[in-house]
Length: 325
Image 1 (cartoon, rainbow, N blue to C red):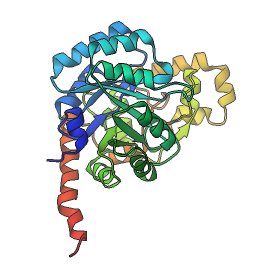
Image 2: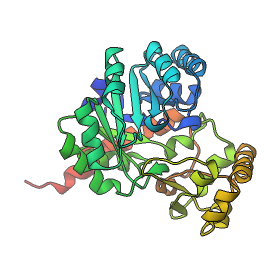
Image 3: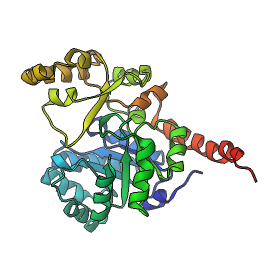
């Protein structure tokens, strides 16, 4: 069985973690990942205190395995965060703090509640800042991933972060969708992986079936880094671009960002409706380059079991052939 030190730290079977992708996560998805041996993580930003308490209770009713709750620090709301702390999920995950935001109080409050702290960073200095502030696990997020990302690719970023924050365990994120990516992450020094796009294309993911099929159809080459989704949503992320499917919505506004800002209210309503209706050409679809590796919508347990088995086979069977006495 594939097992790394982060498995012992987080109490999980496989070193595979669900990214806390806001409304793209749900109680069934989080519980399914944890029940399958990974660590499910609920995206908490934007959920009220009552919603957080209800969701955590729902996860606990569905599985007795460890899980996490994820907050975007630049948008964190005290009542929601306090409710999460009171419910004591085993892991509290954070990402995207402002540069002037002190990480220590949030990490300390989580530790005081007996929780592990995980922090996602797309740059070495940000990873170091989180390590100094007391994080237990660092996620090194490469630009290949879907949604909000930085500029550095996973291949150089992961070993740089591993060296910078040692001996803290590191998870690799961005561009990983199968056991080959997991094996590669371990070779780069990571203790495991954090997945986004691959776990969106699952039966349990709370997104429209047409969105899932758009991931399956994507070549990975048809994604782009852009500010268009954030302009339409009238939000500003600290130092991030959004990786999205280059569909009709993106093509229509590329080079017209100034005009989109003028019409953001109307366009934002339109893309929300398109997403709800499964109109994938006119919605904002945040997916990673690893969509090119995904050829089917599967149950969560199949994704995790296949990924772990493939990585184990690569490590135990394929790679040893290249080492001679």
